[in-house]
Length: 78
Image 1 (cartoon, helix red, strand yellow):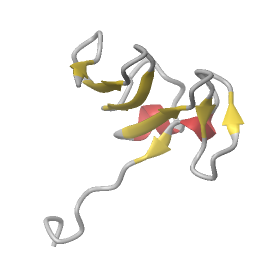
Image 2 (tube, one colour):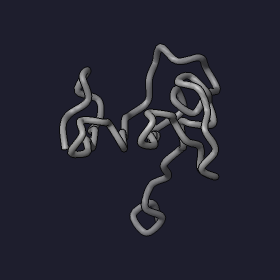
Image 3 (cartoon, helix red, strand yellow):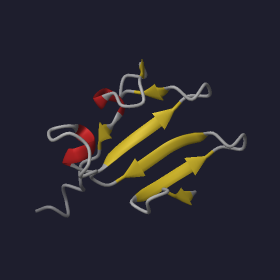
Image 4 (tube, helix red, strand yellow):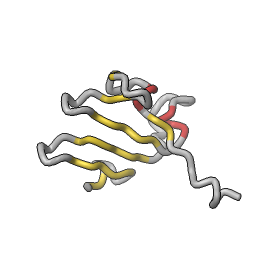
């Protein structure tokens, strides 16, 4: 596990050095209304470094679908 380059999240790297999972906070530079701008997100890469959406479909680096939103713990939000 490593911190994200800008310190706003964490990355999980496999034994081959491929970033498999990244979790990061809101990106104020991302377009308004996108998942990345709206809150914490999860990104997953396959062995070929393709980003995946929440259905396992491959998408582009900037594709909104590959920036999967993470919601807080509902127990703590009550």
